[in-house]
Length: 88
Image (tube, helix red, strand yellow):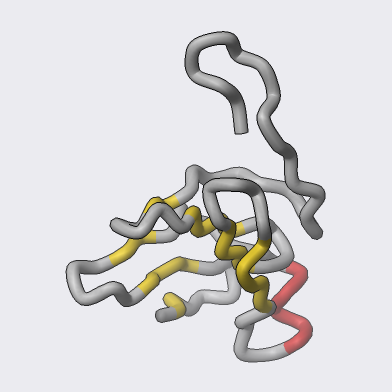
C-alpha cells in the first residue's frame, strides 16, 4: 500500500505467487486479491484476514487465477481461474 499523497510505502505483503490482477474492495474496506497461488482477504492496515487455495483439484493450482475478484451486491466474492472454473 502506498500513501496517495507522498507515494511512500505504508505496508507491503509477502504472498505466495504473483499478482496479475487488481483487488476488489468491500464496503467494509477489506481488500480481496487473487494471486497465482491463493485468494487473500486483507485489512486496509495490511493484516491478512484469511488466505485460501480454492481450486477444485490440487493440480489445478498450478494455473492460478485469471481475473480480478468481483464482489456482488449480496457480498459474494467471485473469481475466475485458468482451471476453467468460476469460484464463489
